[in-house]
Amino acid sequence: MFEWSEEHAMVRDAVRQFVDNEIRPRREELEFGDAAPYDVLRKMFQTFGLDAMARDQFKKRIERERTAADAAQSDGTEAARSGADDEERSSGGGGAMFMIPIIELCRCSPGMVTAMGVSVGLTAAAVMSKGTIEQKERWALDLLTLDKIGAWAITEPNSGSDAFGGMQSTARRDGDEYVLNGSKTFITNGPYADTTVFICKLDEGNEPEDRKVLHFVLDKGMPGFEQSKPLRKMGLHSSPTGQLFLTDVRVGRDRLLGETEDVSAGGGRDAAKATFTMERTAVAAMALGIVERCLELCLDYAKERVQFGKPIAEYQLIQLKLARMEVARLNLQNLVFRQIEMASAGRQMSLAEASACKLYGAQAATEVALEAVQLFGGNGYMAEYEVEQLARDAKVLQIYAGTDEIQVGQIARSLLADA
Image (cartoon, rainbow, N blue to C red; front, side):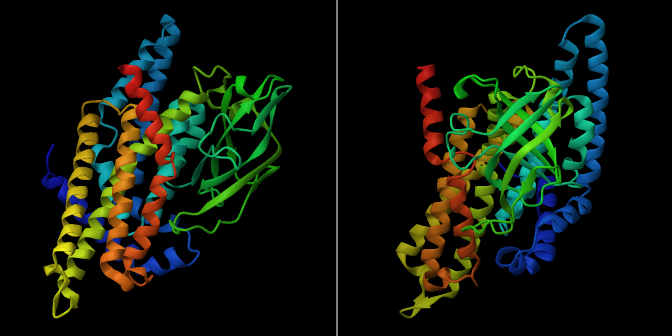
């Protein structure tokens, strides 16, 4: 794939028109007020039939899994189940139709992509990949349609990049139930989430480094479960971020993903790493949207802004900035195209490939956005101009889902292991 097809272009134009009509007029309240983004995201889902599509795909997947479960029970194997999963993967995972809305939303409001992606992507994916059929029906469909908002809670105040080693949140068995304690921070959708996937360690009296990592599903309003007000932050203002506090929250086994402590079957570090892979691959599409918009704004401004008697576009240093932005745009677009081709072939990026994708995308978006501010000069530093917001929003791509430094380590370990 080397360019968007006519069908892709039609979808792109339709989403862009929706953004121009429904989101840009609300930019002030979303980016500089306290408006939550969920109503407009739901409207987008309804406008493009994404909610209906999600319901249809969910119904088909559950039917396949029930058939596979019956077959596996009758012959005592997992072959039927894996066949259903292979069919799901071979569909391409959404491909271009998944990427295009991300790109277009990021041209205006990257925060909205983060809020949407964590709910529809990370939280729903955790339930869909490791939950029982009953758990999927109980929680996942409402997340996939945005009827309910989800949060995926792994980061803690003292863990940061060392998500597992520094994890202090615990689950302790108490009869047929578990008692959960701990706190999470920097949780996207945390203040408003209806459904939260809470990741913690099973405390059996053993050393923390030897404890199993389990995933539990929590509902808003459960006794002992507190969700903070939105935190103030540098960027992504349209994506509410908060803290979670759990004090002796009692849950049954029905809320343990997979309903088993066998981490090879449900939950565990591998499940979290799979979620990291999904999150990191999406950064290329987010970065592409930011870079496209920055370049577009800079081209217009460079042709209109006159200094020393001529448009600044005629100065070579300005041309150099524009040229470098175009190189970044092409590289990011090629990364997105590669992901689409892989999805069409039923393949997914490895964690190391996803890390490389995120590392480049995050750095390119941040560099381009900061250069856009520089090109705009004093105007670029003013909130009235979009490049100011895009520069603040781009920076977080180098931090969340693993910092640049974490990505470098992941890539290097993979290279050395294969050498």
